Every structure is written in C-alpha cells, then in structure tokens.
Length: 137
Length: 137
DNA sequence: TTTATTATTAGTAATGATTACTAATTGAGA
DNA sequence: TCTCAATTAGTAATCATTACTAATAATAAA
Image (cartoon, each protein chain N blue to C red):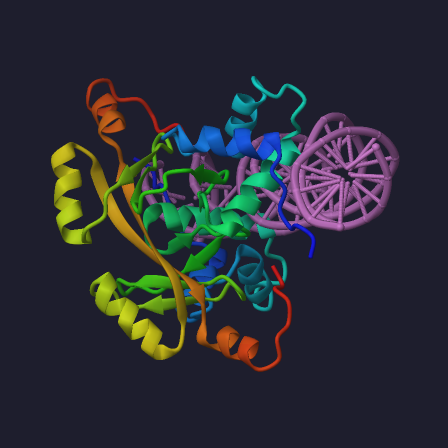
C-alpha cells in the first residue's frame, strides 16, 4: 500500500500559520502570509491544501456571504461574526442563553444566533448503507 | 418625503414562492420557479430582491460552500444541512443537546453542531456611536 | 385623473472567488 | 538510489454574484 498524503513544506507552512493566528483568514490572506516564507507558492496550492485539511477535519472552514474563512483553533469553540467588519471572534461555547448575556456584557450587539447542524441526512445515510457509491461533492 | 420601497409583482411572486416552499432554494431555483408566472423576469431582479428582503429581515439567507440559499419560513427555527446532498432541513430549536438526540433518533447523522452569532462587534458598535458613517458593505 | 419623480426592472457585461488543468517536481516506500 | 504517484506552480476556465444602463412602472402630489 502506498502513502496517500504527503508532508510538503507548503502544507506545513499553511497549517503553521493557521495554528498561530486568530483572524480566521481568507485563502488570499493565507497566501499572502505564507508567500513571505515560500515566495514560489501558488494561490491554487493554498486553496487545495486548505480544502484538503478542512475535509480531514484538522482545520475549520466558515462560509460567509463573501469569501471562505479558515480556522486553525483546535479547541472546541463557536463563532461570533461581525456583520459590519466581517471579523470572526472565537467564543467558548456553553449554552446559547448564557452566552448571549455574556456577549452583550462584552459590548457586542447580537442580532441573532445561528445554529447549523452538519452531517448527513437520513436519506443519504440510508442510500449509502445499501450500495456504496463514492462521494459526489 | 418620498416612498422608499415599492410593491412590485416581481417582489411579490418571489416572496410568495419562498413562503410556500421548504427547499431553501438557490437564487437560480427561485428564478426558474417565478419565471413560470413572470416569463420576462430577470435573474438580476431575483438576486436584488432576495438580498433586499434578507437585509430587511423578512426572509433568511444561508451561506453554504456553494451558492446562497434563501428561507421564507417565518417561524423561528434552525437548520440541519446535509453535507452530501446539500438539503437544508428546518429544525425547531430548543437546546443543542436535546436536539442532537432528537436528530439522531430521526436517522440523521450529525457530525457537528455549528453555532454562529451574528450582529455587530464592540469595536464597530463603538465606532458607529461616535461619528455616524454609512454602512460599508 | 394626470403628471412628475424616482425606485425598480430586463438584459447583459463585468467582477471576483474558486476550481480545473498540465507539465514539472518531489516525498516516501522499496 | 530508484520508482512513481501525490503534489506543485502557473495559468486558464468556471460560475455565482454584482454592476451598469436605458426603459418601465409604482407612488405622491397636483
């Protein structure tokens, strides 16, 4: 059996940046930063690695109404998204009611709480059980 | 003072469709449906109205890793997103723990619960208080 | 009702983020 | 070291969304 994933300097640098920032960067921001150490790196390489790592679950991906945002924080947490400046702030999650009060005490204006469950629905799950097909992304 | 928002047949048809579907359609899907009643409607008109209504808060907008999704369900709820077929299912929200159990009983495979708070952060809120500038979207 | 004003529209071009593609490179097992 | 598939750099292509413009139509005022 051959290896499936290879360690590359590009991947290492991208992950290293994500693990040490709290800005939840866009792919472009990751690219701009990593380019300082690897001037030849390609934007496509950044996208490919970010998506691959998000797929593996070792980093987080956040969908916004503009660009993708990525997250290297390994501790379980949730997010506060500022709709004005698009800043994403990490939130230590306990329960929404308590958190809401905490946030408002902090000075943030919470307009709504969005809860999104991700996974696989009953139908897809069943389809997969009987007759395995590959993922159709 | 003049009026600000006008009632148009286009807007009415778009909202009517959203209020009577549970598929959380993409703009394209809204367009395809409304076109049956208004063959001359433009896709740009659909986008403009969807964004305008979401801005007003009378419909919901959901960001995915592909297209925008819109939601005309007026009852407060949360979402379950199937990562396989991208179907979005409405969830009556109480608290995440109870809901998680309910969902798994339903047969859905929940991989993670995403909680997103939306609003305006302390910094932006303060900036706005002293020296009002327009929104910079 | 008629007129004036201006938000809205249809149609289409432009934008911009993301992905696809390809020849060259390189990581890792043998 | 050798082999070979995974990965890369560079760039073209894709595609969802937005911008633009002349024409239209919804509303307020006459």
